[in-house]
Image (cartoon, rainbow, N blue to C red; front, side, top):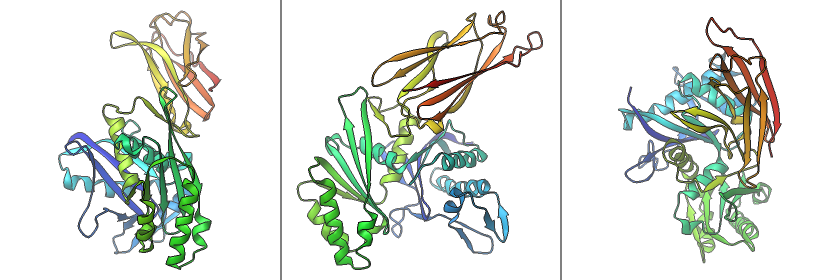
Length: 399
């Protein structure tokens, strides 16, 4: 097996897929599969079958929980997705034959708990666990991409229009530097209906889009504007962009999301560059949850849940051996208010065995962004100290 060094971004969309590997030499993402004929390294989101036909459109059906039929036979959706991942990820071996994935970040247009769980399950079939994989939204990819650019490009807010030819959305990145760490967020507006009014008239489409842009950025102080999506490849957009770039920086391209995912892989797979920033949206928790432990010959805090993580991605377990304490203390610290609260879990009836005579399995999961449940299970300690089969659960409100 090759050395795990690849930091890989992966943009998974219904019709197209993109991949990019972080180049340590260039310090930026490099597209996988880029050619003169395909400069954006886009590949169709489809599976080629043995008879030469293609299985396409399986992602929308997978998200809806529908069966996927291959050659007239129903197939397990997880297996189909795992097969697609295997085929696409194998492309990295052509360029990096002696290296394997260290950190993979998959970005999707719309992230839901159900779809995220399916992706993790499919990756698990390939031996890629959650310790090496993350799933983020296009919004989050946008934020990671910007935070890895020169600061002059985001000293103020940054706007981005995403147009796939049908749907037009506007995202605006905002940084609140008054908080520590600085809070990075994004707002979204949907202008799809406005663009549909143009029909197929390109001149009218350009005029409508220009009005939409000026309306969206009116009275906003923006350092730069970004345009992404297949819809901007149409000829009408160039003339409009020439007008919009007067007095501001404007960028056009189709690799923003995959590059953002690649930077996120760099952030999680190696030394963090963004410790002074917290990327937060409505699905992310704003507190750290920790317990004190003794490990690696020193006292430290074990992080059960980290602020800035989507609540539905938090479902972890650890095992520990208690060292005489009859209670397990959890600390919840809000990173903005700095307020700390400690919650105690009584370890009865293992009292008398907490002096290194039992193992405890600690698990944490979230019911929603403000409610977590901590579970502690007595695992016993060999034949001399069998388990009591006791399970403790504590539900905690997280501000």
